[in-house]
Image (cartoon, rainbow, N blue to C red):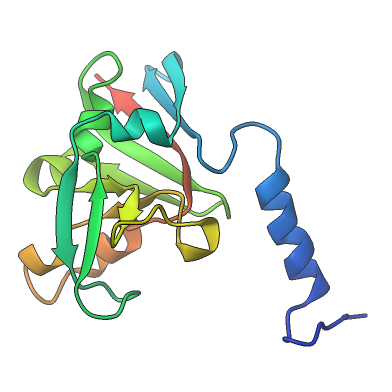
Amino acid sequence: MICRFGNGFRRSALVAALALLTAPGTSAAELRLTWVADERVVHETVVDLPQLDELPQTTLVTKTPWTSGMTTFVGPELGTLAKLGPGNAVSADLHALNDYSASVPAEDWIDYDVILTTRINGAAPRVYEKGPYWLMYPLDQMPQPTPQIYITRMIWQVDSIRFYIE
């Protein structure tokens, strides 16, 4: 049986959304960072929005497939986050609240100003606005049309990042 609310949402979707917001572990504004070497966790930490705001910030003004017109994204560069732990990161796996994940090679954050967005047009995005954190590429500065691989790596609702180090 499918129960529908007046706005067309299924009850199961509502239950799933509530589970995401109340799941144990990190809160929606916390970000778990892990560094792995030889399949072993060598360092792990949890940071929150105020701690991310203390890091150097990069501003990207770009168009995306999911926003209307030019949008301003602000946050620390992924390479800056990688350097918070030990070793030389060669890639990162980002995980989202909805269990989507994306792998990003270090070449991406070396070649482009890839940021972990903490602000969109000046405001911290809520979960339903693709927050709390969204990996953003400077799409307008990249070869056009933007290769699909970069689009698939632009993960939102990021709750953890695992860096693989040498």
